[in-house]
Amino acid sequence: MGPPPCLLALSGVKDIRKAELSLVVSLLAVFYQYYLREILFESIGVYRYVQPVEDFPYTCRLIQHEYLEACEDIWIDEESRTLYAACSIEVFDLRRGQDEMVYVRTIASEAVSTPNNLAATGDGGVIITNDRSAKVGFRRKLDNFIGGGSIAYCNSTACAISTKLGFNSPNGVVRGKDNLYYIPSSVKDMIRVIELHADFTLTEVHVIHLKRYNQMNRISDETMWTAIKDAGQPVHYKRKVFQSDDPAYEGSFAVDFVVPPFSEKDETLPARTVYFKDEEFERIDSLDSRPMLVTLHGLAGGSYEIDLKDVLAPLVTAQGEKEWAACVVNSRGCAMHKITSNVLYNARATWDCRQVVRWLRSTFPNRPLFGIGFSLGANILTNYIGEEGSACVLKAAVVCSNPWNLGAASLALQRTWLGREIYSRIMCSNLKKLIELHYNEVSKNPDLDFERIRKVKYLYEFDREVHVPTWGYHSEGAYYRDASSIDSLLAAKIPIFAINAEDDPIAVNEALPYEEIKQTPYAVLCTTSLGGHLSWFEIGGQRWHTRPVMSSATS
Image (cartoon, rainbow, N blue to C red; front, side, top):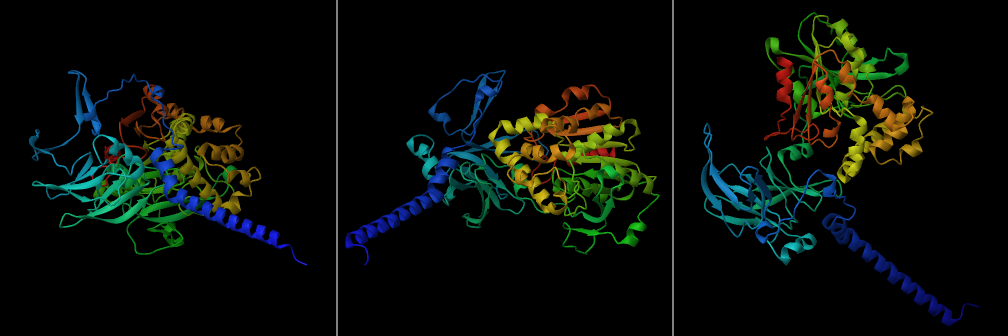
């Protein structure tokens, strides 16, 4: 005998209500995923960390005026106490060889309502981003929620809105060497790639999605060439795998030597890299007197890094007596090298560099040897030079974006949302990928707990779970103090040319050796106000740091 009809009816009602509830939950989930999440996390900025002005050594006073609401930037003349506001677009004529600009006109048009940035088109025209729908008022405030802004094209005769494309605060624009225009949003995690047509219309050809909640307030050539980078200079390498001659650091590591171009390919190695044949490498020794550059790359990088190749290319392709030889010492496990022991590397891993320099001195007895390091490689190189002291066989060295004081750099990364959630997370992620790639060997280290390692999110947590137990430190702070190269600078007995950017978010300004530099006659520190971390980009994609490096190398 079955259940009474009333119970069946009640059960049916419950099933219907469950179905309705499931439908409502599903609709809410869709609403959150495609609309509400963007408003909460991107437009409103939930979980976005804003540093209070009290964190900085400034005294601020609020200036409010309706005509200042659409101004993108301001400057103050300290002597005349005059405030200059960038609220319109002025056109000047600058002839090559002249040192004065001649005013031509002011671009005034309804199509240019809230100008944020511009990019010249090369034919007398200009692409302009309007980052808001209106200069002032309630409609401007609504832009954070329903979107707004537009793109305009202006030439010498007129201006027009070229496209809207559903933009939400297009905040900058830069013209790439591919003649496309890269336009970021200050509230959306994307860069739109736009093409300009002969009829002056614009169409979207591509969208570059950034890491979630990583919006750009402004794009520049520097930012664009960091995010949109090609394979860089066509440097070709041949690889030799060395076995460590130090029993304390057993295992193998790869050294890539710059060679003339070749057509061979090896899918197991980075682009333009193949292994030396045994008979080739046996004949590599030489009595020539070409200068040779020993290169150390950045964290989890390798010989393929663009900033590294941008420096090597002009040196190794120079003609006659100006031609250099070069090699890159890849950190263990990097650049598609398969490790053969559970020993990777750390910020004080000078042992492989030391072995390579000794081998080079023996193999090329007449070549003057020089060193260059980038980021973490700069820290390792400086430590090596300090450890060698007066016995260092390198003639001189260049260190670019050296973090110097690892403890100070780590604290600076943790202090801001951008440092913690972007840079620290990305570096941690890269190292986790690297250690997982070599899990079979690294897991033989009984001091490592991979269950804990796989849960870490930030760089300092990775250092705590990996470097501390691997190398016998008591804490990540102890590791940072020992591995920092700032004190090694004082032990150096060869010339060192250091280049750092004051706005570097990783090798932070507060970690730079300003006082230590004053105490040694062997080092010079060059700082730039801009440049980021190894990102001294110039118009056209070239990197500024290659020029001072070239000058110091050839002087």
